[in-house]
Length: 398
Image 1: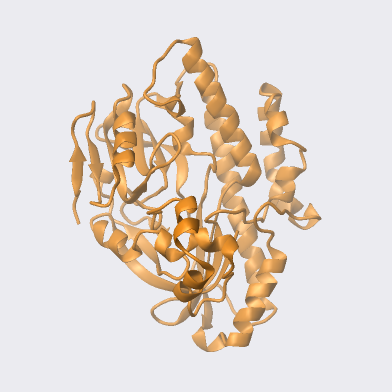
Image 2: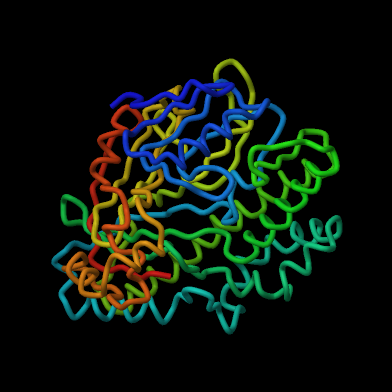
């Protein structure tokens, strides 16, 4: 499906891959497109919805500038998935419940973290020197981080919100493990610290913006290089965090299922990040906030909601999308609205066949709060091709 809408009343166009976009999101996209350093156009993926500062599902190419709030507060948030040698025949009802309980014990979720980080110290250790160097240049960041040990204890933890761990089956009834998480508290602290610095820079230079959360760093400015370094650190930490959790999940499965192997190399992709890339004749910074890279041949993951399908995809390298794709179903209503409109009984009905939490604490993650994932995938048929369709049988929410 090609571009469905184009906003042209802005300094550069906004190209949108869906008809399902509200006026508030359009306004936010237009504000971003009005900035003087935006390159060529702004791309909005089919899961686009309103976010803080920049719209979730937006891809923003910039000349010599980065908007920290467009990268987001969960720097490096993304997905990892791996196919196993197990099949549906290995997953009876008793095994599924044991798996759910074991993963829930082994992987801290929400605000919890590991009480004894020694088992994961090896995974966290490579990040100590980089963080220490950043703190030497930005000692006030230490206050945002709290205790120095916290980021070590959070290696291999899920977090909350829409983060999840799932056991899935593909079209051949092969078992997959898939999870969604990011850079945890340390990434959030880094993001909030630099977003505040960017705002102060705008005030100091008396730069007027349509939204204060669009504050930016220009290349060569006081904090630009440090922010790029900090973002790279958080992106690497987020990827290592997902790998640490994947290892914990595989170990949990091994306790209750027949012996198995990982039959494909894990697919691992960020969807809140910034990278240096070449598009439309220029080397630019590309910020993907709720979008994955989908260059020709790139493997990616596009998850649905609790109770809906997810997809392993291969990118087609669409130039107009800056070689990008949707990162998931995308919310169609806020968490507050979901709690107001749905009940625990609705959640139970919409997650039939899935071993998961079905209490009022996760009603905001009910499938009806999200866009239809099949519509999202149809709208981006020019961006990706589907390799596997997955349906979850176990889901652990943050």
